[in-house]
Image (cartoon, rainbow, N blue to C red; front, side, top):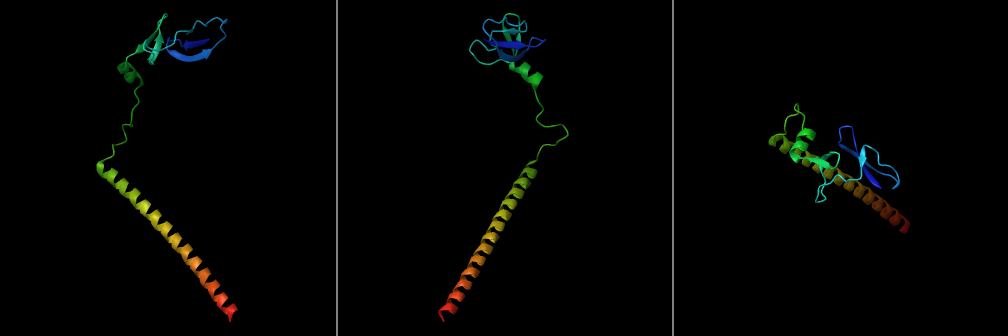
Amino acid sequence: MLIYYFDDTKRFAYTDVIADDETIPTNATTVAPVNADGTGMYAPSWSGTEWVSMTKEEFDKEFAQQQRPDNVPAVTPVEKKEAQQMLTVAKLQADVDALKKSQEQGAAILATLMEQQANNAKEAN
């Protein structure tokens, strides 16, 4: 049987499965912590007979996480544009490096072919 544990503050803690003939612990229930329509609850707490959900506003207030530390300034449009330009320059540099490598490989192949052609011409004479 699936049971739902709550902590000392009666807030939902975790689920577990126990045998059907086992006694349900005093800090657990078989009542699922969901709304009547089957949707999940915000930090549900056990009232003794049912789970009670926080409102979204209460949940957001209690569990809100700061998106950016206070000491980190927001990125300005100019800084964003500069970062995009740096990425563009880095990509272009990578493309140039790839072209140089390709050109070097082509030159090496051409040198090998010319050497083979010269050897073939010598052998033919």
